[in-house]
Image 1 (cartoon, rainbow, N blue to C red):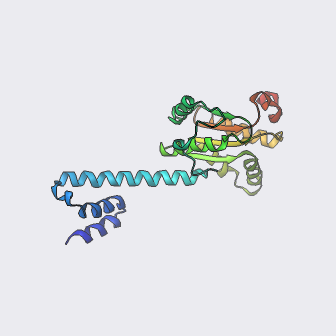
Image 2: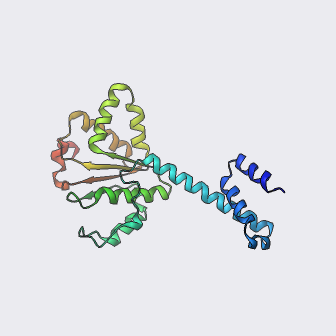
Image 3: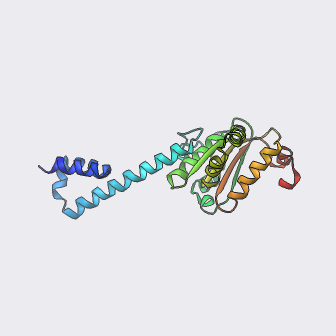
Length: 217
């Protein structure tokens, strides 16, 4: 007779994982063989898993990935892009993020740079890291507007505080003076404290032309 009051109380305490586990266990015959400690352990396990899932989903929503369903488990290594499987799996482990290192993903149009980057970002969200995704052309437009309407400080904090910042589709347009300044501020604040992933069709030896300032290249 305590089943419904107990479930109601668990939900009132926002222990939804425990409430769902309680209902499931009550419906299973094998639950009769469990002692109190085993029941409690199962309820706690379900609650922990439920909270971890919700935190992951929240991080994934906040990341606003271009390819939200991209996953490292779905990577096809048989395609013609000649992706190094061992290297990609090493990157998927996330040590480079833990060590605050940066990653450049370059290659011609159509090889899946953005999708692969989003797959790594989704794994980072699973691992507990905060992620922010931005296409470079759109980002610079947003930064320009933010300077004018007073949102720059808030947008800047979002960009520099993320554990992993993805700057997708770098180049080929030459940066303006304001864009160089904003990019330099973002890079300086993130350097050594967080990780940045940049995708680009341009070979890295041409980036100085895009930046347009030898001292920053």
